Amino acid sequence: MKFGVSTFVTDEGIRPDTLATALEDRGFDSLFLAEHSHIPVSLETPYPGGGEMPRVYYRTLDPFVALTAAAAGSRNLLLGTGVALLVQRDLFHTAKEVASLDLLSGGRFVFGVGVGWNREEMRDHGTDPATRGALLNEQLRALKTIWAEDEAEFHGKHVDFDPVYSWPKPVQRPHPPVYIGGESPAALARLAEHGDGWLPRPNAQPDEIRRVRAWLAEQGRPDMPVTVFGAGRDEARIAGWAEAGVERVTFLLGTRPESETLRRLDELAVLAERHAG
Image (cartoon, rainbow, N blue to C red; front, side):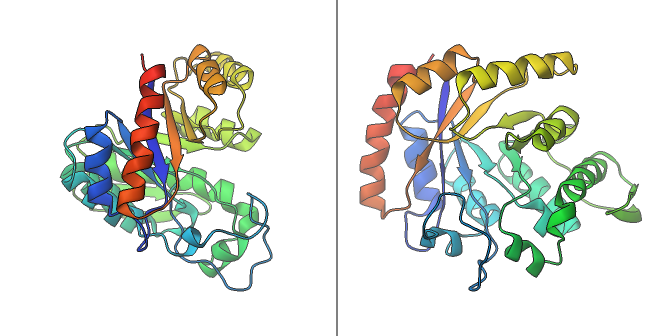
């Protein structure tokens, strides 16, 4: 099993290029960065983790800019969004950002996406939370069309455009792998139809992962790679994920200054070495 890190990169923590170099030096294979454009001051949507929302949510750097810096600080590290809030993004800018990052990194980008949870944040972008799932499904189809075709067009209920030119095209063909976050029935349906990999959260038990993988095989999607996103240090759980066929576990790394971050990475590297294989 492979190991990486998922984290929030902010103006108060380690730089993304320094972090990427440190991860690669310690044998980690991937870095996944969170995204929030902003956090409304008046917030009614409960924070999923319970209690007060951590300050990293409203200080996080743009993931595409940060991952470009991480690409410059590494040679082989996979660079992922975990997750990009596509329903809050302009489609054409996102198509270009993904393709540009994949090009500049030499084909190392992994496009992790999810519908998001912060309804006030979505509404500020003009996104209706009630239809965000349907919007995301169309956006994914439209992005793949833009990346694949020289004169791309798409006509759907939520996304509609006549033929366009858009370069660069991604290095990875037909496109960088799209990893779908979430465990809900809607997320799993999206995974089966649009995904190249699954990003379940660490509350996903090994038996659940086995059931989903069996269901995916029935849908004609066998051997879907699974990356557990934002895991802790429970070694029994990690061993169970390995037995369930999980390809990769990303440890949730707190946002800290450089020296403290490097110490924590040393600890995680020891843990990862015990379970690598």
